[in-house]
Image 1 (tube, rainbow, N blue to C red):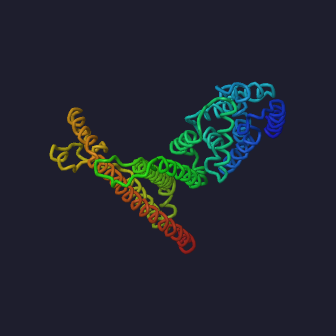
Image 2 (cartoon, helix red, strand yellow; image 1 turned 120 degrees about the vertical axis):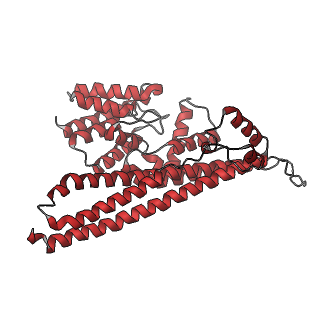
Image 3 (cartoon, helix red, strand yellow; image 1 turned 180 degrees about the vertical axis):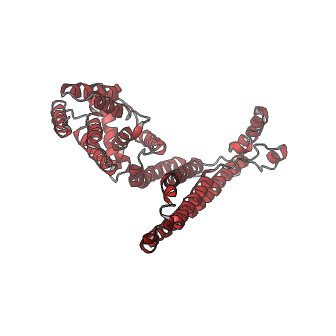
Length: 396
């Protein structure tokens, strides 16, 4: 199959399609958005050095992934995949290509659950804008389109909250997109949360000025609760990032160790001068892997608490590690006391945030040690291989 010619036909067909389905209501899901997704799919595909066939699959899926909005907005992924299959059949595309294109399009349905690299690329390309500097403007366009199509009836505040939930739950699937876009996506999320905090603070302003001093019995404002929620979400996001970093390092060192044990170590009798460099590299990888595993290994407490802990308010019942071995009745009784005591409740939240911070500190310390060992170990190992090859290689 001539993929270059087929891609040209796809591009021409979609150009005609958008011209025939011009609709001013589609200010977001239009040709411009589609071309951005196609460009993003090409960019990610180039990074992974996709062959001609796979690159055609992801770019074709990107072209067709949103045209279902013009056909059946409520089920646009399915309609888009059907339209793509119909067109590809008309140009005699291979059945496996058609199947892969349909799979990539259907994988963009929220929540995204892509299977394989090709589907991951299309999913990341579809939401590429979440990690771009122009995210705010495109988010506004999406809200305008939603209102124009009468698919939603949300004011600006509700839309912002739903967008925050999307950004908090979303994670890029390819390593390329994570490395390139996650930082900017978090900045976009923080801006939205900042606006949300400002809005919450405005709600807390009293309508009538009071000169009375707040007493301890008065309920704290929503701003405090928002602070706890944002802090907890930030800690969870940092924990996920740490786990991803550890996973990357474990995977990398596992591959290197596998190559060393299966290939190089079998050749040491033939190339004895490489013994020391090989052992250095093996020690580096094993040590790095150990620290990465330690960074992600859970530490589970006893899972029990006593009546004295409740009376002295010296237990955090918001963390499962403090109650998973207790009966439901004991836990419910303890939680009732927490909910009826503001000091106990917010003290538990403070302990929870602090505990998360302690765990994060341990994770990142171990990860830093592991990354340092890997970085300097790789440098020393490579130098050892070079020296052994230059000065001792002739004596094998």
